[in-house]
Image (cartoon, rainbow, N blue to C red; front, side, top):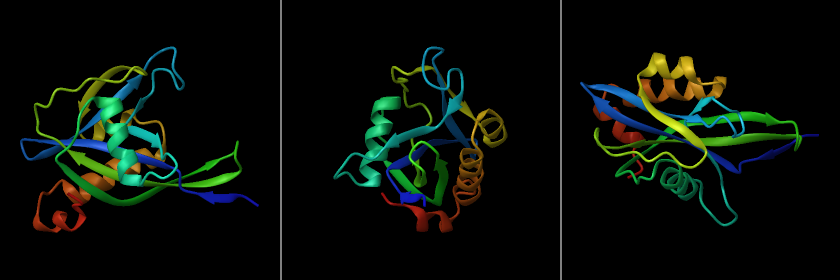
Length: 153
């Protein structure tokens, strides 16, 4: 019987340009796992670490930044990890940064680009990632007072 685990997080960096959300995606280096693919930030949760702390750590390691505004994306990505025979539940966070914040891609990445919803979903490999982008855009994109219900900080 498969086990149920939650030892990973997904983090999406967003910014607002002309009242529209853009998503920061990273392209994997040719010699890295999943070479050439585009992704948001994905990280393991270390023992004793909270999901939010893991997402913030991964944000610093992957993009070289900290975000002043953090949201729960109100979504839990799920995958089946056949190597562990486990169903993995992955909390999703959105980190909003100022439009001109400098980004420094981590060592596993060739490039980082800002994408609007349709471009981001076209680049992402996994269905859960595409769903996360659409959901974040739906709940945070309008910028209305309802988005404050998702704000962590």
